[in-house]
Image 1 (cartoon, rainbow, N blue to C red):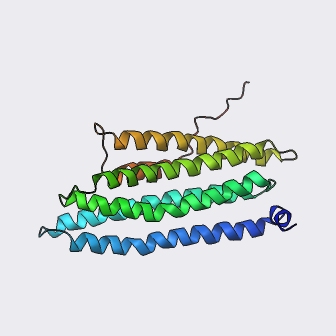
Image 2: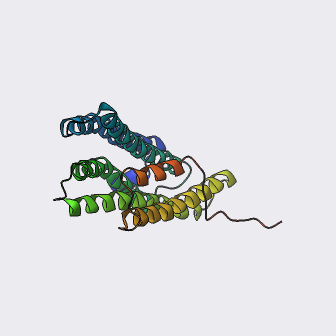
Image 3: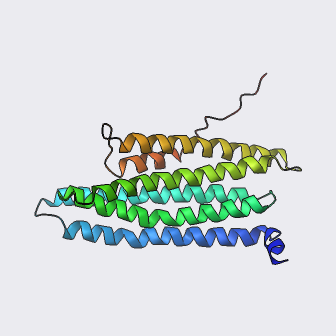
Length: 222
């Protein structure tokens, strides 16, 4: 059957889908950035060029942070393609990861849009701003969670090499750790008492991707 043919497709087939999808997602971020910058310039009240430049710089940092997170997800997703069976769960979770990742650029665009309104003193869409901020942290949490699930299920397969099993163990641990950290930053950053102005929370998550933090690393007894 055709579905069986998809499950048995080569790794090159899946790599092509993964690379193409994430390539489009990153392209959307690049396209959105100048639009956000132009809106920032057009909607600002007369003020010093230094302040406008600082606001543009903050916007660029936010988009770089999102780019870094998507890049991190893409790298881990590609590693999961090699050396494990592409069963039904893998296919379903891969589809959901790609779908959730594709939502990141438009939702982060909304975060910047509503944040700009707040900076201008317009609070008519505060609830929309809160919803968009919750959504961006929620989506990133879900994507890392699905990556951890794929790695966990992959470890249970028979015939894995020790290197591949260790690789999957690493992805499971780091992805699970990012789930906890992202959820924690989201809750803390959106709390009225500890509110963090965008893109502080997203930038913090991006920085974490550069370090192999693993709360679930097993300690081997000597």
